[in-house]
Length: 328
Image (cartoon, rainbow, N blue to C red; front, side):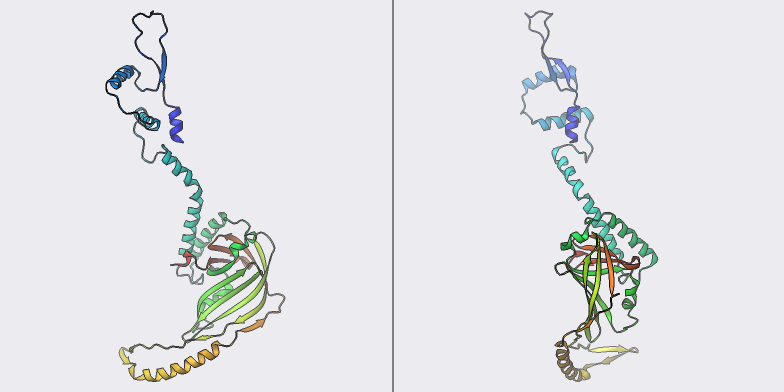
């Protein structure tokens, strides 16, 4: 600690303890005491003053702190003297890297805002994202992700990608009435399976398209994925239709109250159809193509964030389901 080193540098002057007794010979050697003092000539007068005005003894640490201030002047604020400061300094080293990683993760997630998972990202935003990803990869707390399958386990939500194969899906050009609600990946490390899923929503129904695959560990960071089947989820129809009291069309308000009775009868029919369709099992399509394979390289992994790289240099940033990073 800084206070200990300062204490060892504290100046000590050798002083005569007192005036020799009257009967002693002038040639006798006076007793010598090492006294830590700043103003040696005034030490004897201080001793007499203390003898006439005794004070309560102070602890060594307090005396030391007071004397150091006398010698070197008042300490600057935030100095590392004292045991309390030493404890604070000892605890600063460990969370420093964690704080830096948390800062980078927050900046990365914030940079995704308005990019529609990467589809609408500008070139400047993409460059910023690449730089943040590179910094996180350099601080990867899990150097061998495939040896930490418990961290890989679970549901991961796609937050950003540079994979152009997903952009037509995200652009809604092919399905103008469908909206991509969520793209996720579920990893089961016990069965070595992966399920990629896309959830869609429309004004009248919601559905999903998934692929099931097996994976094999090929290196501390790389897994080989082989797709086995595709699944088209059963559409879940909206069983209730809520109409406003009126709508505005061409500058005029149209009262919808008269047609609410008609909507009620249509709603009853829609509910019956929804229950019938929802009870049907999903449609499974086997994938027998031997070329339906891919590989994935995990370059960053912790409890809530995963960065992976795939074919053609594409990057995927996924956030663990339930993480606070998903909260805007």
